Length: 114
Length: 113
Image (cartoon, rainbow over all chains, first blue to last red; front, side, top):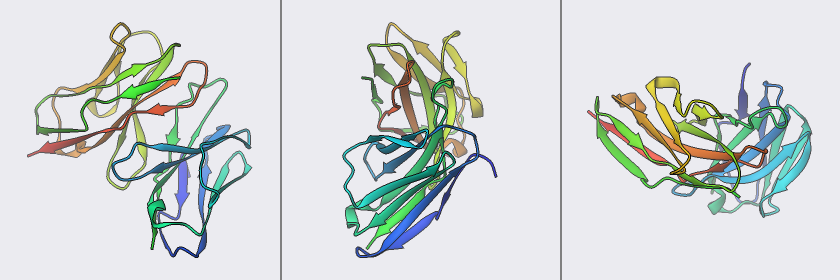
C-alpha cells in the first residue's frame, strides 16, 4: 500500500446513524487533515492533526468528531448528521517542519445523508 | 494570511488547443505555490509546485506554470490538451513558514472533441 487510503469510498446513512470514516497514510508524514468538498463550494478545511495533536478545528459542528490514534491513522466519527452534510470528505497528509507542507490526498469518501 | 483567486470557474476548450488557467494569490510572506488536479470521483493529485528557483515549473501530463512575483500570479498552461485533461484544477498556496494550505475555488476544464 502506498500513499493515502480512505475507507469506505461510498457511504449512505440516515440522520440517526453513527458511522466512521477511516484514513491511513503510508508516507511517514507527521500531519493529517480532513477536508470537506461540497458541490459548488470551495474546499473546507475541517481538522488538522500535527504529531497526533489536534491543532485546528475550523468551527465544525460537534456531530463530526475526529480521532487520531497515531501518526498513520485518522478517523472521522459521524453521528446525527444532516442532509447538508452530504459531500466528498477528503483526507490528506503532509510533512511539517522539514518538508514543503505539500498535501497528499486520498481518493475521498462520498457521504450521502438521507 | 494568504488568499487565492481563480478567475475562471469554467474553461471549455477544443482538443489539441492550448489552454491557460489563471491563478492569482495574495500574501504578506514568501509562499510556495501548487496546482492540483481532481478527476471525477477522485481525490486531488499534485500537478506541479513552485518552491524556489526557476520561475517556470514543469509538471506531469505536459502541464507547466510560471511564477510571476510582481503580478502575484501562477498561471497553468498546456500547449495541446487532450480529452483526458477534463477535470477540476485547483491552485493552492502555503506560507513558506508552514501555515495551512489555502485553496482557490477551482477551475473546471472541459476538453471538447
